[in-house]
Length: 252
Image (cartoon, rainbow, N blue to C red; front, side, top):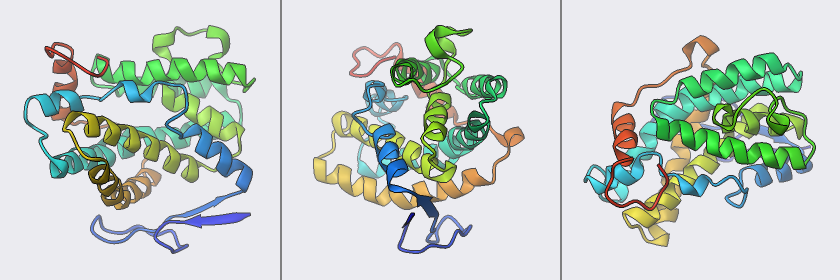
């Protein structure tokens, strides 16, 4: 068993947002390799195709430079990813481990109900549809196999990520770290093309946001199902208006 820690410490602690945060992650090598596979930018789910409103925010001048991107992504990590995706991922993994598919489908629907625009929902379901096909090919049990009882626009990527992580015996906190990092990496890649940012700036930005990601993980641990939900009006507006943007690099 290998213990992987953040910030070189091995104690789980809840801290103020300005303070260092450490998270203990216990994962064996096999599970770690599977996590790297699941959170890799090379996973064939098309996460790079969506900017999640960032393209419009840049086009209209809300986000113009590296510091603006930092603020935009920090707000989403703390008030969207930590409030919806990560707590839902934890609950989904509990039910997926028991193969309680009725509860998995119910939580899947809860996640989709939290998507404030059609574009944000499409991001989730398009990636979910792609991951369903992959899990079918890998013979991983899941309630959406071969389109059973659902249509492609009813399957959340969060749900499929949770099912794969539980099947590969990745603990929930480690899975949450991989999920959040994958999201962050895709968003920084989008900003790199759109602002644009240099490759060095992008790497600096990823480093600066790692403590924020740690706080998001800690916050998500303490959110129960009845507390799941987020409201970021500017994100919803940007995502909705992106559909009518004159020219786009990313899907809407």
